[in-house]
Image (cartoon, rainbow, N blue to C red; front, side):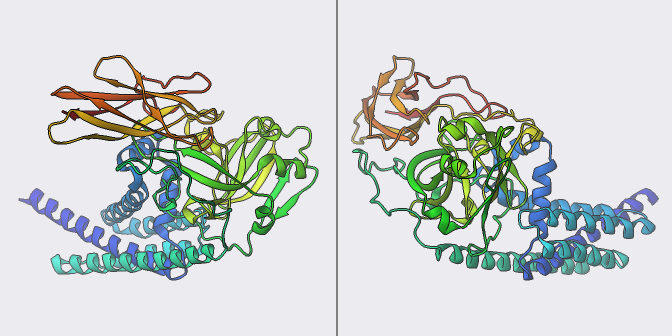
Length: 485
């Protein structure tokens, strides 16, 4: 009986502490949100930075396009669990444990994308509320529900405030004006095949991938791009300065986590300044071997300088996308993009500085176990459509997109079951670095069939058929679908 009673008391303390933790987290998040910050976002970035690589890879694979929401939810649950654990400590240890919790949350906010001072105060406030709540833990279901309901409501209010500020920032970005020539949407001769991906991906449908829970809010009137390090001429350029030198180009951008058949890729008409022009103005010095692209929070991605300086690798400082300024989630006000290199290696978003450095520089992803040299996009074909004609017909329309940047797509083949590979019709090419749509009609006998697709690049590279997860050299495999005639 004594053991059961002790277990019951411990369980009540655990639930009560968790409820207090939820209330404290809500209070801290609301206080931060009032001033435009977030405790959860800072903790989310901390988790992304220090979680084991396998955990990060699993999260990306399982959560897909909802990875940011899942990260915030996971951080909130982790905070509640930490509070519950603190509540089980001896009374003399709860105050220092709560202080450590607050210090950790505050430091995480200060090193997040926005370097959020309000978020840091929110973390400290959460610790103070937690300490006060654990002094007199809620007794009974009513008290626990009150704390939990208060915490949930405060978190919802904080989220609403943050979203409102994000919308206001998005409107300030829109007012920057057009970025590009507003050329008509291009055609490739395949028309509007139902279910087939558009030739140009709408900006709102373009995938988003980075290690931040939310994009930073950068004032376009105050922002300047700094070009420094090992250069003869240090430069500071505004958006207007960059727009005068920018050109439009079409290219597909692919996430290194884009497994076969998935949608972490998109084709856009970009507006950017060739890196060759910027480097010519800055004049690299002897000893400069890498171009470091640095975001507002210090996050870096670097690239070998020589192929960018000579134009062997055509890279751009991008400031526009599909005729408009880069949306915040895609890197406003500027990002670096080298068509043909996976997005994780192509350059940072929310750039504040281009620094020319030597080989002593170490990138963010190198520390996480990814290779130091850039990974080039592997040719890949995706099946978007496999529709039958109905009325008992065995005719099926099979269509999709394929990419092989920077060289371009020379051909796409499909295979039905274990038969020979046969070529399909290709749409017109926008640019070698862009994706290319394809389509064919096949006549299938009754039964269930497997359709596979593969692409060949102009350089002669045939799509890798070996199934392989993204880490550490990029994904492999063929996209297949199953249909019944």
